[in-house]
View 1 (cartoon, rainbow, N blue to C red):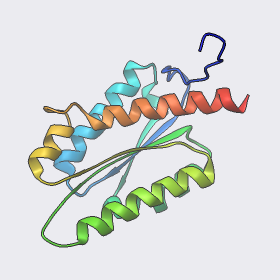
View 2 (tube, rainbow, N blue to C red):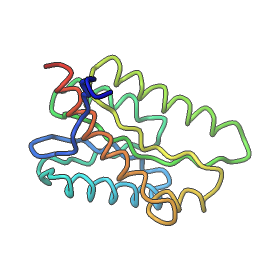
View 3 (spheres, helix red, strand yellow):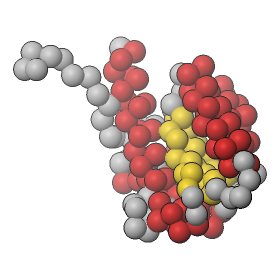
Length: 158
């Protein structure tokens, strides 16, 4: 491994522009994810003027808006944040599945990183834990991922 060239993204967000795409549904959980994401971006050097929060009704709506944001050319990355809690019907699978596959498709088709910070949990307690309580903050994790992906792509693209 001594002679292998390693290419990886750094965690410097200075001069990068971010859209935080956040669902309003389950906002009592999502707001914690948003706070974590904004804090992480700022800690890594992002200026507040380069962070915009875009709200959508729910996670199912995220891919459409993410595509518009990515196509607009204003953002280096999108941080998608939401919360889907399993209920007693199959609704959970439809919403979570369409959200994740739709956001992945946006990323692949536009080349703009879409960091996935949509938590999918069995219950409210797990959601709260992942939004800044016992299990860290998945919004912060997604923001850091977005920074790294932008910088990695810049290196890979030359």
